[in-house]
Length: 225
Image 1 (cartoon, rainbow, N blue to C red):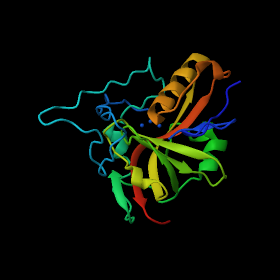
Image 2: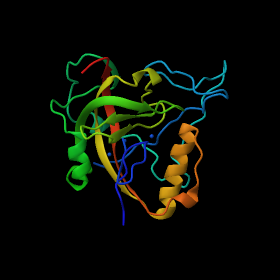
Image 3: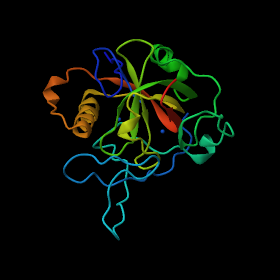
Image 4: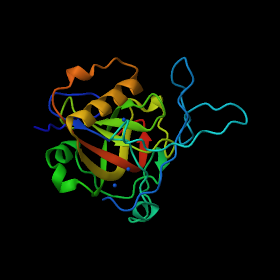
């Protein structure tokens, strides 16, 4: 039986992703180089997160579904422009910011993934974790204690700094639901473990999972709610 899994932290019942789709035509993604040895480098907001030597260009990124079936793809710009100008919100703006006026709770999205899959939504909450490799995702705490939702973008489209942890995020994107088989589940969990620098044993995964996350169009991150 598939189970829903919440965010980068695995919980027994649910990963809700946020480590980009109502799926309109998607543009090829671009990427960053991996961080240099010695740990992740703190990227500046909205700037490429990987250090690149003078005169060196970052190598292009291809969404490798064979290695990571849950990798993100960039949303078509026409979809991104559907709701017009951004709302006037305080905070650091990422991507196009936030255009929708009302938020949907994380618990509501998690409880009704079929209802929201493929739809554009706004969520908000405290940032619990940020991708350490390229700043390409962050997780938002749910209104249900112990749960989170992942907000994910293609590497380099938006770069979220580690300093966003503990701050308040208002984020907008397309709800994406991915039903994985057992082999794909192991690949996704291995990729997440590699991102976070922790060990992973494929034999420990006994059941396939379903991921529900937000593929990002824009966000505002500020110190307080």
